[in-house]
Image (cartoon, rainbow, N blue to C red; front, side, top):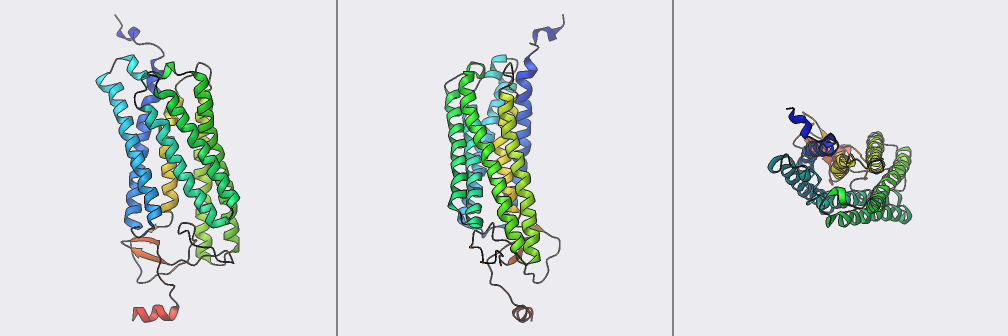
Length: 317
């Protein structure tokens, strides 16, 4: 007797997205852990505000990973073969979408602060924060919609449609808005600057902003679109499992873009970079004059006095 006939044909549509989501999340969490470790090494003197955001987001990701690991062990370990275990919500409402929405809100708040520094516009900052708050509200609403439901298959589809639409729609609009305004103000600053190092740095940030904005916005749009497919397949679970971690990685990529890993450390090197990450006031001509110091082979932004050639020669001697 063929034992395969006792396995439902639709099992792959339920278990498949879960496996893909869990494995992808664990891999991305490893990437995020390395990013946070590099930040810890390179920016020990960073502001308390930056550290609070970075380590706060990482703590949320740790909690989310623990929840997802527990759910994976329950479905594919201790209750392996029990088809209901694959459909159980458990603490998934807390890991996804609540924590993902919180992580997204913090990351979007960082971009709102950068836009405030770059543009000095309350309208742009307020628009980003409003969209970020909308997506956070949608995530919280979706979490509590499914909290008291034991199985995913029993969650009313209309509730998922409304709350999920607010969460993913707010995420999509917020990321598109961030990408557009960040690119505009960075390009403006790059064109106004006469310092080559600043232009190169801003060009890198522009490229990074566009890339991360497109990725996070596309994931949110795809996630909502898949949830609306006929038959309501659970493929959206795979994307929801990694959406928050992708946010975190994108945010850390911006923070760590200030550093440069090199094998040899020159005796003295002073460059100019944008104040995008420092949060200081932009000069009237649109250029920035922050110095760079080197620690342990990692070139990072510092807050040391500007050195003139005469002063540098004196220090070397």
